[in-house]
Length: 362
Ligand SMILES: [Zn+2]
Ligand SMILES: [Zn+2]
Image (cartoon, rainbow, N blue to C red; front, side, top):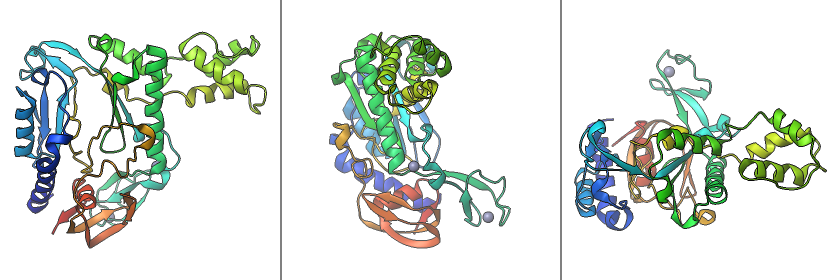
C-alpha cells in the first residue's frame, strides 16, 4: 500500500468519524475500566490504552482515524498495564459468527486464489506458485448472499440457545454486524461475567454441538423408544422434538435424521473468541479495517440488510488502479471483476479494494 492510498483511506475514515462518530460509536459501560487498542493504516497494533471517558476515546479515534479500533469485553482495575498486572474484574460473554466457519456450497464459486505478480486467478486449492509466472499466490475469500444468510441464521440460533437453554432475557443480547462477513453478540447478563475460560469454552462447545454423542449412538437410543414428541431439556429436547416430528414421513435412516436435527440447530460460533477473556474486539460503530463497513448494531435481524446497512462511507467517486479484484456487490450494485485496470468507483466500494491491498489510489 503506497502513501497516497494510506492518506486516502485515513481521510475517508476521518470524514466518517467526524460526521458520524458521536452518534454511531457505541462505548461500553464502565469505559474507564476497558482496554482499548487500534491499528493505524501505517501498520502495527497499539494496545493497552485506556480512556477516562467516552469523550476522550472519541477524540483519540478522530485524531488517529485508524484502520481498526478495538475495546476489551473485560473490565480491569488497571486497563493500561500489561496483561498480568491489569487486575481482571470480569468480562461480558461474547460470540462471534463468521460465514467463513459455516460450510456453504457457494464458497467454491467465490473463494479463489490469485497471483500477486501477474494477477492470474483460479479456483481453490491454491497452487504453491502461480502456474503462469511462478509468482506468489494468495487465497481470496469472497462473500455472497447465501453466506451472509447462513451467518444470520446461525446468529439467530445463538439467540435461541441463550433464551431457551440459558434463560437469557433477549433484551440483554446486543447483536452487531461484524463489518465483514458475520455477527458479534455481546451478552450483558451479569451471571456470565465472572466465568473462566473453561466455562466459556463449554458454552461454545455446547452451541456447536461438538460435545454430543455420535449420531449413531443417539439414533440407537431413540430407536428403543416410541416417538412421543420433545422430551427433556437442552439438546435432548431439540433432537427428540425434531426427530419425532419427522420420523413417520422421513425417507432416510434414523441416524441421518439425527444428524440433520443437529446440523440444522447447532450454531457455528468461533470457540476461540468466546473463550479468550483478555481479547479486544472491534468497537461498535467503528469501521472494519478490511472493508470500510461499519460494525453496526442490528436492531431487528429480519429487517437487517448486510449489503446495505453497514455501508456507511460516502458515494463520492474516486479513481484507483486495481491489480486484481473479483466481482462483488455493495448497496445492491455489482462491481468488477477487475484485473490490472484503472477504474472510477464510489468511495465505499474503492475502500473495500484498497484496504485489502489489491489496488492503489490515483
Ligand atoms: Zn502469476
Ligand atoms: Zn457464499
